[in-house]
View 1: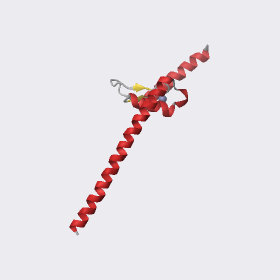
View 2: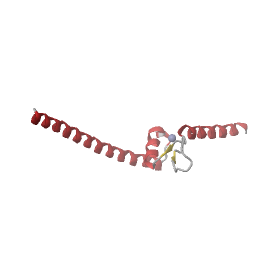
View 3: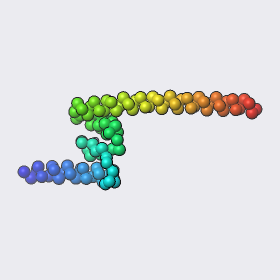
Length: 103
Ligand SMILES: [Zn+2]
């Protein structure tokens, strides 16, 4: 009986510590992790956190959300890399042509 009370006290302490650690303003809506209580600004960030931090204890729905979010993230990262490479190539040849014309 007393151990059950201690467990629930420990859980609420952990949740309170997590909330204090992240300092979320009370008026904002946060997507809170079911496992550790960490708040996230978007559903996608929470889904990515689920997969990265709680991969062993996910349900089917959470796993599917993580896989969708990871696929979107990978696509976004590929696009960013392509844009960054394009910008570097443009900068390189721009400076090269400027150097060739000026000197
Ligand atoms: Zn978590």
